[in-house]
Structure formats: structure tokens, C-alpha cells
Image (cartoon, rainbow, N blue to C red):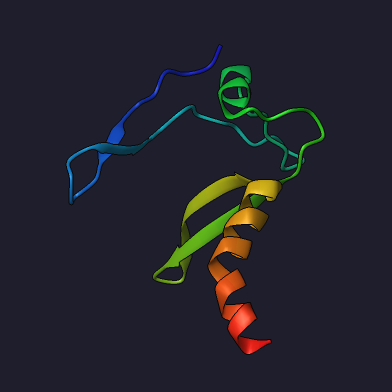
Length: 89
């Protein structure tokens, strides 16, 4: 059974909730983990879909990790770099 959110983080500028702990996930001996069904459904993640793992470093250690749908990440990169690439080309 998926865990309920443990804590919401508030935006320092607006005070609005910006993120929260969705669930606790365990890693097995083979390094595999399972995203709870409730989280997959809410995010629209289907079997076989590719996710990109993005990590942030602090003081030489990974302090935060985020999963993004590859299609969504590609769109974000295109939006951010598209205008720059048009100028260069």
C-alpha cells in the first residue's frame, strides 16, 4: 500500500506548496525499485515508458533526484535551447 505524502515543501517566494514527498520507495538487491501504482496513475506513467533520472550534487554527494518523462524532458530542452540554436544556426 502506497505511503501518504509525508511533508510538503513551501516556496520561499509565495508560500505555496511546491513539492511533497509522494511515497517511500525501497531499492532491492538488484538495484530495482517500484513506483507505487497511485503515483504512476497520477503521473500518467505506463509500463515501458522511459523516465530520465536527474540528480543534483551538494558538497560532492547526490542530495536530490527527480524523475521526468523523457518526452517531457525533450520538450523542455527544445523550448529552452530552441531560440538559442536558431540564433546560432
